[in-house]
Length: 438
Image (cartoon, rainbow, N blue to C red):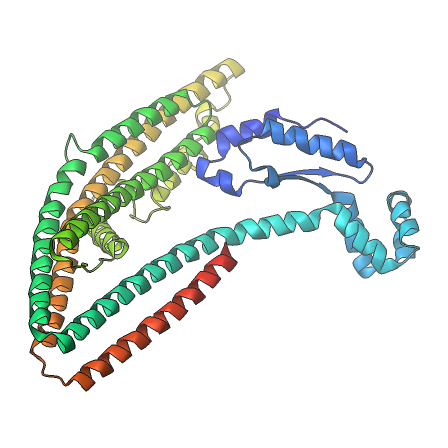
């Protein structure tokens, strides 16, 4: 067999395929029916060594001639297909092993062609991303179920105290209200302070973005072709999207860590477990508000503030520059070869400057967007926190002032116990679904 052709595909991967698209890239080695299994296996092994950046399962060999024969047998008889001398030579072994049975031959060559395995792997990768997203959603559902169950258990404990020792019950209500107020004050202070860590000339966002700019300016200057420039622009877009997600993810982690620290501290002081906040929902609301504000802001790169679509307009503009409106040939006319080479070099140099300009404009938009999200996170967080503290306080006050018989209280306890059981059953169902998806 011929060795794996490495130069052109390697150049294609390095110069044309954006980094984020590597996850969807397959290398399929096609041959035509007359190679022994050992040679095919050696070829696949060689390809996997040449391209370690590709997952090994996504490099595989298929037999295109056997696939053609399979499709021929879908609509024609075996004897008719065997009239072709090449097909007869390829299929004779399978016909002999299957004793001339049409369906058995078709099944055998379908398996041997390996197209079924190719289709299976492509399907697996195509559904994996949505499945992983669904798993993350279900994990959030489980967190919500756990938070509700904790609240119901706390409610059962309070009602038991109300029946057994009304004075202790009122002390407990007072302790919980005090803990809620302290929690609100501490977290509001933290929320205002955290912005200094990410915003401003010494903020973490600015430092990361500056490193990104320097790295990509160097890559633009080193580019050797217009297709490579487009790849680098696409890589830059996605790294900026990753930066935005990194910053908001770090903020969420910081809030989560501080909420746990304050919660543990107040539990030690007041023996009170505090309500949980949906930080992912708060982050999404802050992003939505920042995106909406950014779209109303004139100027910039035309970025629509949708992660994954960031520099699409800029890429379209670059695409015009890179061939649809102005090309090297437009500028060259009928000049000689030497002048053509010189003109192409000048043309590429101009494109690099345009690409750097796009990068700078776009990175400024990303910086402003990150700052906007961070600034909006604080009021959104404090608004949600105030709402939850107020609702919890109102619930505790209502429980304290409402006159109830022990039978009424016991009835409420049974209702809460029933809710906890249903939540447990729901949580088990969610776990089973997640196991099926993973």
